[in-house]
Length: 193
Ligand SMILES: CC(C)(COP(=O)(O)OP(=O)(O)OC[C@H]1O[C@@H](n2cnc3c(N)ncnc32)[C@H](O)[C@@H]1OP(=O)(O)O)[C@@H](O)C(=O)NCCC(=O)NCCS
Image 1 (cartoon, rainbow, N blue to C red):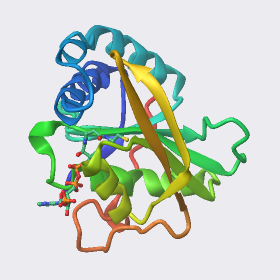
Image 2 (cartoon, rainbow, N blue to C red):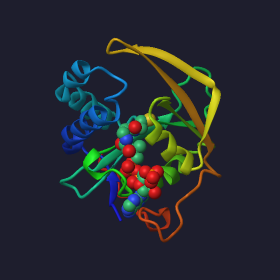
Image 3 (tube, rainbow, N blue to C red):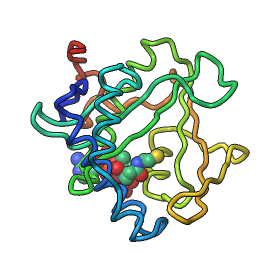
Image 4 (cartoon, helix red, strand yellow):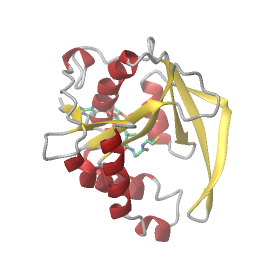
């Protein structure tokens, strides 16, 4: 089972490194090689350090204190007009070297009870329509795509499309007790910030 803990400022660099590495693999068919090669780890590190200091979004990382195998960031929905009871997974990334080993599921299992504890009744997230691996992952967690919630944007000289997924916090599928990262065995660490 992957340990799940709250991010600290010391994790900011590794969080940025995982994000850049993950983009370069997951989005290689969606974004230009030049754009992906130019992604700045330094800029992302500064942004995540700031987020960790503000504790918004809330960030959990998978891995021992000196390692970050993946991370999940969540908070209130950023969608205009979203009800106060709707939370959003702002981002979720696993190190490509550790994909398909339960890191993503452990992170979701860690975030789920915290979203519920914050009073959210539903959770949404946006995912690129051309990212089948992530879409399959979210479907298996019990989230459903909203075909009417699709938007396009420009990035790296390409037009990209993303779709929103949603699920009820009460009904989003927690992990069975015998799976890695099962919430029953998740012990939230004390917040360090
Ligand atoms: C999407 C993402 C977060 C999923 O994380 P992950 O750690 O690979 O996911 P998990 O390992 O928990 O589950 C994925 C798969 O591993 C399998 N798996 C889970 N635990 C496992 C284990 N212990 N051993 C072997 N396989 C396992 C799952 O059954 C699942 O199978 P599938 O790939 O056939 O669907 C990750 O692939 C990622 O970072 N992708 C790039 C970034 C991205 O797209 N983020 C989402 C943006 S919205």
